[in-house]
Length: 205
Image (tube, rainbow, N blue to C red; front, side, top):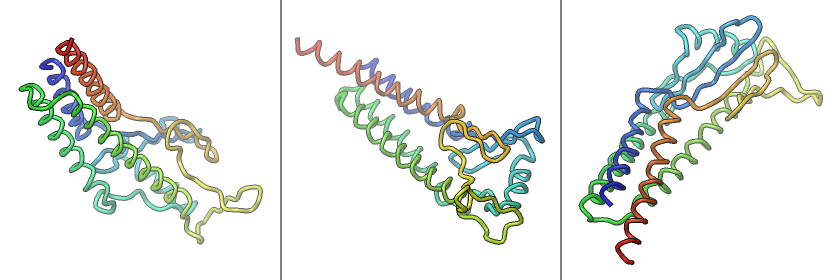
């Protein structure tokens, strides 16, 4: 159980990487941009992959009526998400320490994983809703208006995950290093659960 508990602690601490590295990355490539423009999404806010990327993206979006990329103080998520991550890290470390001293059993490791999974799904759902609003809630007085074949306004919603062609832009949306650290940390808590369960079964046989 001690080994499982140490892995649980390590897995939880890996979530702290989200404060240093981007969770997600959206990249826009086009012939006029040999070096693609990029948005790096952190749990504390959105930054450009390069110095002027956000300015350039906002400039392009202005012509088709899209909103400017929000600043951290304009979205409640960037205030709440860091607190949630800190809370889950502390909870995971506490569970791991208690497990190390045999105060809780391995089932608490799975409980942490389930709770973190639920929070992650809620976060992705919220992120997708923001993308929908960002790409469809357009200024009716935009300089350029593009419609679908049926006459409805074209949506510029970036993909939640993967690749999509938007006009002449190739848009790719994928996890960044912070996202991979989150996945690794959660995977380690599953390993901790499995090791703890195996150790518990050995004691009963």
